[in-house]
Amino acid sequence: MSRAQPRRDALWMGAAIAVLLVALLSSRWWLGDTPGQMHFDARLAAPSLDHWLGTDALGRDLWARTLAGLSLSIGVGSLAALIGTFIALGMALLAMLGPRFDALVALVIDTLLSVPHLILLLLIAFALGGGTQAVIIAVAVTHWPRLARLLRAELLQLRHAPYIAMSRALGKSQCFVMVYHYLPQVLPQCVVGALLLFPHAILHEAALTFLGVGLDPSQPAIGLLLADAMRYLSSGVWWLGLFPGLGLLLVVLSLERLASHWRHAL
Amino acid sequence: MQLIATFAVRLLRLALVMVCVAAVSFGLMMLSPIDPIDAYLGPQMAQVSPEQRDLIAERWGFNEPPVVQFGHWLGQLIQGDLGVSHVYNQPVSEVIGQRFKRSIVLLGSAWLLTTLVGFALGVVAGAREGSLLDSIISTYAYLTASTPAFWLAMLLLLLFSVYLGWTPVCCAGPTGTLSQDVGLATRLHHLILPVMTLALVGIATITLHTRTRMIALMNSNIATHAFAQGASRWDIAWRHGIRHASLPALTLSLASLGELFGGSVLVEQVFAYPGLGEATVAAGLRSDVPLLLGIALFTALFVSVGNLLADTLYALIDPRMQKVTP
Image (cartoon, rainbow over all chains, first blue to last red; front, side, top):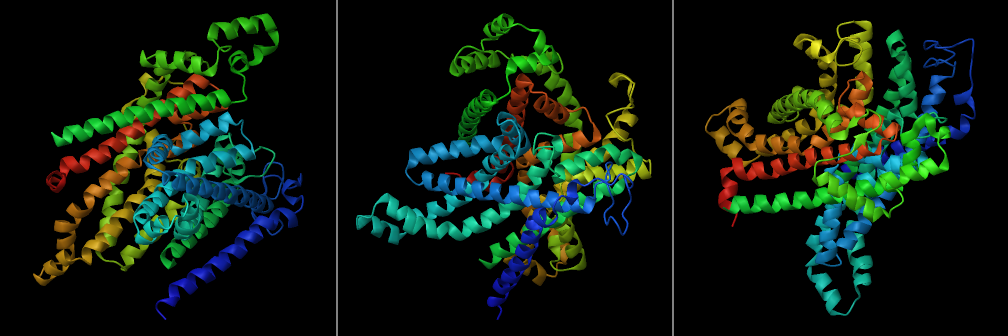
């Protein structure tokens, strides 16, 4: 029982969080145009039964906008995490090709890790001219190095394993060894790695958007909602600042917990 | 001797990485769709004829191939010339110098607070795994590890500055006074919230790391032996635990300077604190390429030196490491 328990827990937790994420992700469609709808009779209204989380300066419902923002965050975050994981995997496999490739990959990783994440994100988002695509690429490009390091270390231990030496001795090609020996060994690591990247990607996307170099200002992203809230903070409008951030925190926290559960279970 | 040799190798490696950082950031700037002449001219863009644009391009060397431009820039960089920031109308090195002087106070105090408090909490939590104190500290650490720094900054601003009125709403000093007229007490008063935010968020990693090491120690033979001799749990934490966990904690906190700097960019933005982080955002939003490049290089150097220190500290402080190295 004790062996199966953590795995079953992780599975249940994964299922519950997956349902939550899909519900949030799909909210963009079942909400329709409510996030953009303005109610001029209820501008900057405090939370009430009509507007659960209150409204903003244009009378737009904060509950709908927060959901739409989270949906956007999850979409951008999952794409960025996926791309980042693929880059990490590709780089780790590339490092296996020989000492020269290994040194090159190590240099790229060191270079990317030596610039603070946020500065690099700013540079890349600036270079690509901002927008959703730029944010996804920027987050993916800045987040792969740590995972690549981990995968590389894992693969290095494998390199001298007897079954790989045997496989080579039998005349299997480099390609065969990569696909049939290396890849299956690091796949679980990749799944956990992608899960661990996901919350970081979401947080960094929100930060970039908050600073004004991220997502397109016409979309209700969490970073934009919070940047907007900054303007009304000094007049005591607390709901605009509190709820979008709380939503973001809940999503990030549940992903983080799920990732650490899975890491232990695998 | 061995120590000096490894240090020299690391220093060379650092130089190589810095050249790569310069190349990557320069390449990114070349990639940008924003025209540098438009960015320089700003609203006067419409008043300039195509011939004048050509003149500007020629004067600044924009019509040369990127590799030649990179060579020029690198040559000037080595002479210490980072170019002129058009947002602040000052040489980039001066902007960075002035801004960094303000940021280093913020970064330094936040770093010190994070390291000390994070370590102490980690030791307390790890000394008795599963206790009430441990679960409170761990929950706090997990929670803040997922908290966006800028959101926490907003909440603190709302609570302490807007509702309670204990702390100022923004900036590094009262508006309308010159920075040299601001007294030390006022300066510190303006620093409280930014430092608090950075520390509250930054503590998590160090606490969790130290806690793990303490738990490992408490389950080790060393601890069992000490328990058998009649030592109390806190005795062991004090005598063995702190030595066991302090170096890794210090290394970790030196290695996470990059994250601290990233946090300071966001926090400075929320509190309108005129430090290096705020200048970074301004440079990004108003396409001030020389300033962006300068900041990228400067912060990369800052973080790399932190990493270098972290690597070297182990060998310097821990006597066991020196004997082990062949």
